[in-house]
Image 1 (cartoon, rainbow, N blue to C red):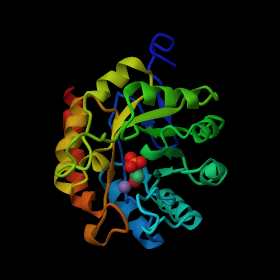
Image 2: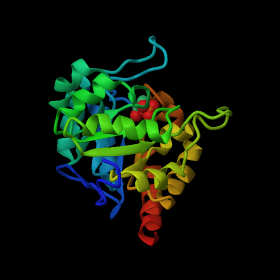
Image 3: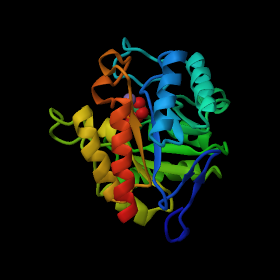
Length: 263
Ligand code: PEP
Ligand code: MN
């Protein structure tokens, strides 16, 4: 699926979204699905900011096994209900090959997380489905690594793939959680036909940096943004420090659309 074989951009289509570089797609929601009530609140906020996709993790790849691991299938149900209530699509992480069927019953887009970018049996399994896949760049993955990971999915016949730059590990992670590789956006666009999005939340790690990194991503040509939100970030089950308040998301989304319209 290199550019040579695929000169035309691939457009990823779901019920409520068309993900390509013509328009700016917004995906937003909490890091984790925390409760039915909470995810409904977050879905309403995402919708208000112009999102067409609701994010939320039900199976969480936590650094520590003692951290909140997600609500599992119960979380998938709440996420689906909340998305349907606000006419949104769902994107949620599938962590394990054995969960592809289960997660596929609830989601519109599979998220492959950074830690699983080279889980080849998982990539092959989602490649066998016809559900779009949002593939996040591993924190130590090169451009060729992510392109080859995408190829594992495409080789199964599923070319509905979105690539996501979400920050990579560099030598200093004291003030930024990861380093947003803005240059990866035009590079990936030039080498592959897939839409390329930016996740400023996991790149930044801190709420105050999410806006600048999001706008930099859009200026670099991103097809969309995936952003974590929370109404009480200090009480979030995961990734609270990088969560935007609903109002912050709305303001940022307006700025991002303004930049997208002039590039
Ligand atoms: C997430 O989206 O909450 C997540 C864990 O992302 P990443 O795989 O990029 O760390
Ligand atoms: Mn997160």
